Image 1 (spheres, one colour):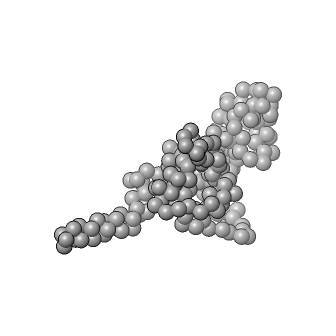
Image 2: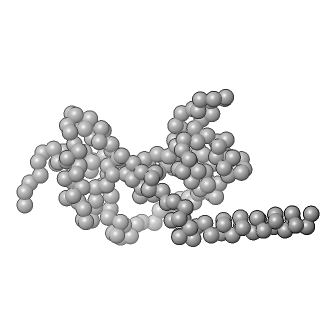
Image 3: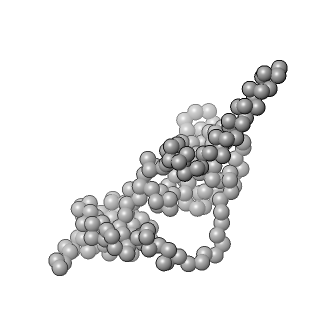
Length: 193
């Protein structure tokens, strides 16, 4: 078996010791500006199909447990918090429409969004302040983070499921049924008038 070169070993060590996923630029900066792309490809190929894999999520590289073995390493977690429906809706809106302001989130949801809702998403590390929109009042705009992509196993936002995938998974059926019922009720009311 051939021994990997020093750059490949250095990239492997840097990623293994990192507290968080690293971008190519961060790895290169850590290794005195070395060109690390080839080393990353070599490592990704080396770890493919093994118990741990080197993956890129949202432009950042990290080691993760192979998905088919993750169940072996799960532990009981303390303080498991579920997102509220409002937080789930806000996260979906931000992911699909980013960058987006609170007013735009509220317009899409049709109800006001509590300040704490966005705070919960930012505390989870899934949403960040992306700046301010040019315009009256210069509202704060929000976007997703690389942590969001990594948590949901996405390489980019383009990997978010489309409407057909959501429908196939049965996630739109209840919404479509309610909407169809509302349309029928409205047509009946018009017919009675």
